[in-house]
Every structure is written in C-alpha cells, then in structure tokens.
Image (cartoon, rainbow, N blue to C red):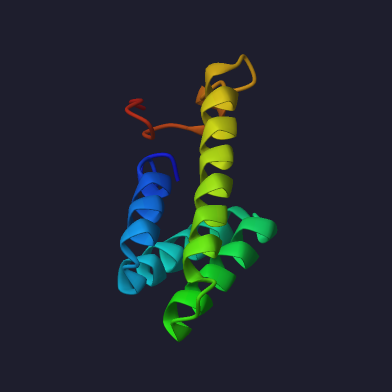
Length: 104
C-alpha cells in the first residue's frame, strides 16, 4: 500500500479541486481494492462511497474525495510510523530457505 498509494491523497485532492470525476472514481476504486486486501473496512466503505459519488456525478463527490484523502493520509502515516518503529522487523523466520535472497 505504501508503494502504490504514496501520492494518492494528493491526487484525490487535485482531482476534487478540478472536479475530475473520472480520476476521482478511478482513485477511489484503487483505494477500495487495497483497503479490502488489508481488511481496512472503514477505509474500504469510505472509498466505495467516494467511488459511487464520482460515478453518479453527485455534488458530494468532491467532499467525499477530500474525506477519503484524509483517511488515506492517516493510514499512510500510521503505516510509516509502524515501519519506523521497533515493531516492524522483517524477519528471516518468515522467509525460509531460498526466499528473500537467502540461499539453501
């Protein structure tokens, strides 16, 4: 998610300001899929609402995209903080022989 959505919040805000409903819909759809993969149901629901609003061309599309951008920013910040903490420890025990560059 960090690699895929590093600039998504900014792109959502830009699309909302430009009233670019196609970009809003596509970005929201992408976030919805990633959120589903992470089982981040609140974010997935918000993304689905933003996608629907953009698809339907409602006046609520831009505000919903702004709300989604804030949520994406919050998730990205939390993920970066977690990865910077001691809790994040890419572990060899998850790798096993021949994985993550290990030989054997």
